[in-house]
Amino acid sequence: MKVLKKEDLLQNDELHIRLRKSEKTLAISGFMVLVFGIWDVIRLILEFTLNTASIMKKIEAAGIFKDLQDLQDMFGFHDLGMTILIVFLLSIVAVSVIMSLSVRIIIWRASIRESRGEQTNVIYIVLSFIMLITNTVLIFVTSSRLGDYNYIDLTMTEDEIIDAVLDYIISIPELTISIILSITSVVLFIELILSAIYVKRFRKKLDEYDLITKEQD
Image 1 (cartoon, rainbow, N blue to C red):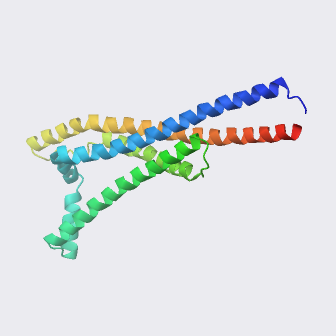
Image 2: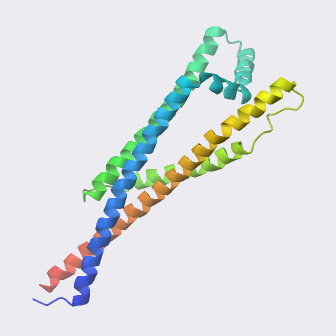
Image 3: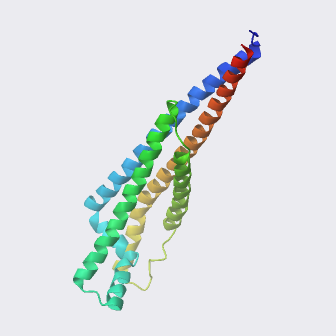
């Protein structure tokens, strides 16, 4: 049997240390990705139930009601048809939220299995990259809304202008929190992706090292 060099043994130990560190980071990042997804659902539910009036103002300011009215005039929808259309649009929002949470659950479970050394594929890394891009775009979209006060029309009445300005001021903390959460999500996904790549790379190196060791025996 050939005696391994001290440098080889030290390198092997260092790989194990770096592997365990990456596995721990991967598990924590995956769990936090799930927590942020659950929090998004809770936040939306609370916002719809406790802040309905404000949401209706935002929808009206965005011109959605006007667009629905135009659709009603164009296609001759009755009240029942408009109700069905609104329910359909709300269902799309609900499905989008559920899909986002489902993707996060898939990423969380796969990252936990990966950190435990179980066999996984790269699908959860691809999903993490997609979520990373989505949250990055969301940061820019929310930031643009933070500086958008064009809907404050100076031709409105004085009371309407005051209400619009107050609504904009009130929305600043909410938009700021959303930006901070999106940035945090981006950081989490970057850590998760890098940790997953490192884990796979370190395990491959250790497998190669074990193979060399067996050949030397």
